[in-house]
Amino acid sequence: MTPSTWSPRLLAPGIAVQPLAVGCRGIGGPSVPGGSSTGCSTSRDDAALEGLRTAVLLGANLFDTADFFGFGHSERLLGRLVAEVGRTSVLLSSKAGRVRGTAPHPYAAPALRHRLEQTLENLDTEYVDLYSLHSLDFGNSDQYLDVAIEQLLAFRSVGCVRAIGMPGPPVERRRGGPHDAALRSGQAQFRKIFNLLRPDFVWSSGNPLLSPPHVAGEPLTEFAARHKVALLLTEPLAQGLVTGKYTPQRPPRFTSGDQRCGSPLFGSAALHIIDAELMPLRDRFGSRPENLAHVALRFALEQGDHTVVAAGFSTARQVAGNLAAGPALTAQELTCVAEAYRRMRQRLHEELLSADRQQARSAHAVQRHGVEDIPAVGSIGAT
Image 1 (cartoon, one colour):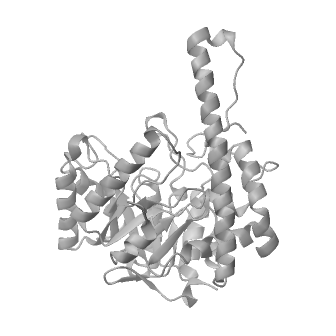
Image 2: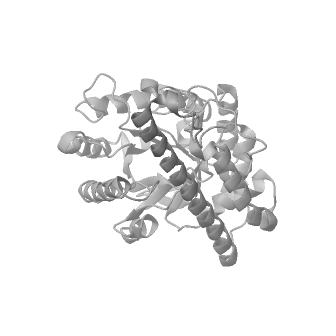
Image 3: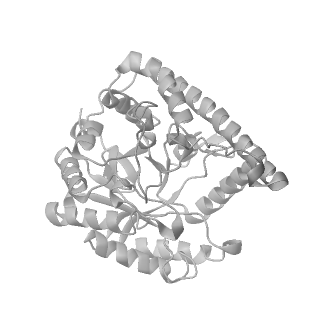
């Protein structure tokens, strides 16, 4: 089964897309802004371009990127694709709000307009089909909120943007204390911006290793359906973790500039948990990474007819494998997959929480006795 055999889904008014889109974060390559790794060290431009061409040949038509991905490099690679296949062959989605440049804030006037102008140049186009806020941080007391909304609405009004979007609420990564307060604050901010902007679509993480996002207790998928707004889900493969291609025996190797470096989810303890909890899915659907990728993609696609799923890639083979996602899962299979992911999330949460506590105890010991008085403590992120 390929995108050409799927029924298109309406992602925004007048914009029907194939339900499995192409995520282009990884092809931005490695980047280290401000000392923090944000890119993907395994990306190569030649492989990325081959993957983009393969996606078009197989019928995919939506390509999702952002100016933050490789600081424009992902957009420029897509621009090369546009020059080859023609603008009418593809639908382009980009985001702004995490690159500040010389402005005091990414949303300060006229920063957002400048970001869009650069995006249009990078993509070799006069308009983008979907343009979204990349962050819900509008500065102290939301001082740049009004101007950001005004500019987005103006972009859509003059036609350089066909539809506008925003990120969903934050997802739960830790429980308890200030984490819960931050989660509630982020959900309240989402509701506020949603009511003011009235976006055409919302994008959010579809990572099955993270708790599904909620809005005041309501799952985001149900919130979006109730408001008749489409949902673009990203990271459905959890950056490859739920495909089983990374195991304790075959850990990943990332270099400088890769945002996965040091992530506890790629550490030895987490890989042991993921590997063990994938066993029921391997037994039922097959043990190859392609089998488990298809399961994850189908699980994400079947969250509702108002959802579109953007799967990332680094090679043409991965693109072809993703776009051959196979038949729909049965209700029984969906339950099996949901339970496997739920167990995975629970065990990972317990492991990471334990590591947090160990790290806190170690830090307390350092403060009381000095570094020389205690042995070095390893972290869950060590591989």
